Image 1 (tube, rainbow, N blue to C red):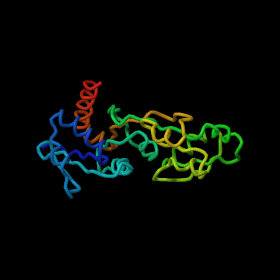
Image 2 (spheres, rainbow, N blue to C red):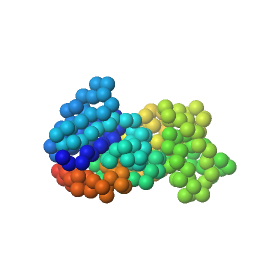
Image 3 (cartoon, rainbow, N blue to C red):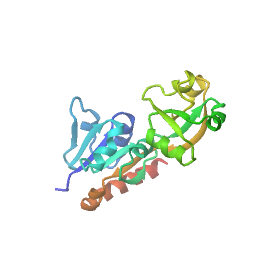
Image 4 (cartoon, helix red, strand yellow):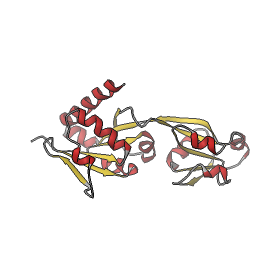
Length: 214
């Protein structure tokens, strides 16, 4: 039997879109699509195991080798700062990681000794403003980050922007784009050596599906 492969997938839309691609490769994702209360799901014919976890935990499972492969947003990957191989841009889950706020916040970044940033991405925020030589105070939020500038908690936010409708509804706008974001296939470094042929089969198959959908 082929060596077992384990996928760590973020629950929700990213997992469902990943299953769409894998099924077109011939991998049975029926059990993984209908997990009930099960935490570990299988395609036993192909000897592939799936674990469905929180998005922020995907890099951790892959880094520690509990999972060989994972699918995670580029934003989560950048925030985690784990030593993983980023193998493929899967082309879905597209959005932008942006600095947003009121237009006058640009001037505040120059005038204030300390610039206040509300975000759930503290590591990315530190790197972004450090590269610009600007000291910042990070206010870590995990709910409605847009509230930060609206109620005066922060000067700006650093967050994911899809349509921008929430920003607009609150009088905010995008001030800078940090990077484009999409779902990425990541791989454990040891697994790439010990299970190279199987992982190459997955990568080639997914890459073919991505090209077909482009």
